[in-house]
Length: 210
Ligand SMILES: [Zn+2]
Image (cartoon, rainbow, N blue to C red; front, side, top):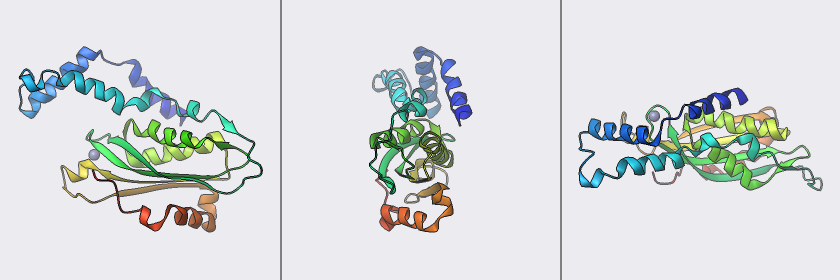
């Protein structure tokens, strides 16, 4: 996975200038059929370039760094840790339109835990990139597994893909659910059941309005 991360980050080193990015937006505006020089659009390329640094901020944050601080003083806590309903905004790497959904991240600690805000930041780090949901699910689970070396990890993502609702097959209201179960979450049905019951049956289905 480190390999994959460094590959993702390679593209950053060959980053175009801001002026080049803005020129590309002007080209897309013309491709859409409008005039990038009309008053309402004149500042748009600069705004889009700025928005992109926010949309894709995940390329410049290092998931291993985020998870670097772990705590081993857990007073014998050895039950499941679950952070559910982590809203995320990602971008489909095939159409560059939003994927909006929720992540549920769980692990069964083996002496070490991580601050809960770090779990949310981990999700964001992988979300704020051009993604496919399946890959993002694996990346989150594997990063947690590598750093914490817990007894098990469970990650479930459910999201609406705007490339499904606003173009192509035009199917609003669909959501894609992906999961990755490692260790006890994969091998022990009761652990997996506990995770699914904690996130709740209602969790899968009702997505934020996109
Ligand atoms: Zn797509």
